[in-house]
Length: 437
Length: 153
Image (cartoon, rainbow over all chains, first blue to last red; front, side, top):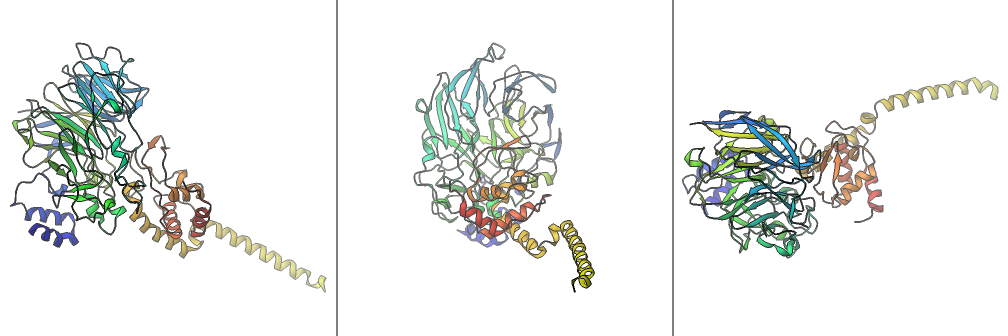
């Protein structure tokens, strides 16, 4: 209660300074994982090379660039790279690169489809378009044997031009997980139209707005062959299987336009940081609550969605799970990777790296994001404050604020030696992050 | 009588023609500013407010949009071309992929038919005369006319 009063008092001056003050006032409290503004976070200041700021001891190298819209990335045990392009370039939607030192050279391209997902597991390369998931048999060197003859694993997924990316990941029991993003902002009768109410019993959730589970080795699966593993997730691009507690973790892209649609309830400043971009630990059957609620990282509450009668204060989401970490709004988490390598210092082991693509929905407030964050974990659960791990992708502060970022982090992968790989889908850059003791 | 007055009539006609031409030349050269200067300025100012409220979060403060998602409003025929088409985008929304300068944009734009004729006229006039754009104003009467014949989708 005390904090809420304090918050209310600060609302009129809800500038960044206000949030910092707010943070400072409650810092004596618990070590909550959620922070209320990007300005209050730990950010690295050391020049890590390749234009990036990194913690001391880390080094960045650009190992390839100008590849196209490089989305997700997979690195084989041999150190070779598969990267998915959002649109096929010269008829090639997947690139295969071989590394020599700090250079990765494109050896071949295949797969005529654009898309987002790419994953290597159990002798296969999995890759997704916006409607289908394919796999390619790999040889002992993890090279694709028949690049022109993929097996179609899943087909007929909805893609309606909004949240169309079908991110993929696999568990250790032969299952494939596919994100099917909601083709909507908040399930209004008319998407993003001011005054249009939320649809009762949101029909989108039958076929989108969740994570679907399919068999990793069964061909031509449709919706009916899969299981809606988790629902109430507006859009997920970054997700990964946590090996420590054998569980799926996802990063949700929260809703847009609170101020545009409800100017009487939300200022542009509130709209810029709300709602939270949430990390959820998912169990089969979970519901994360979209479109009936969003998570407010300042009130630490699930709030009733205004399209469904909310006013920014009324609580909602009864029966919906709570996030395990709540990040500031609109930062667009596109990559999630649990670090299991041995190269980085001990604190990074089993923790999560998250690539934030960067915001666009904060205008007219300054945009933010375009960085890679580290969230420490302990025993398979988030533990302690997240911090910015790699920054500087956007270029200057002005480029960050305007959203005219030079590079936008998207996909993450871990190499066999524990190096971290980051893609940028704006200019088609691949960064390799290493650590020297 | 006529013959006596003839030189005068000719003189007056020539004078009118010359001044008329001059006026027209001047008028043309300064069209964007001189043509209802107060009205245009006011419309742009009012339009900026509408833009900030309803457009900026997607199209951005520099109106250059967001790659792959929200199209730019700068130097495209969608903005600078046919007024009726442009007015219809605001009234009906825009729900198809659009390619501008080799980049595809896919986000849906909601119908903004809840805006008043004057608000639509103002915001379009603002966009057509900002961010390096230069095009004629759009009036509330034009919006009203398009709205009257607009096929509801």
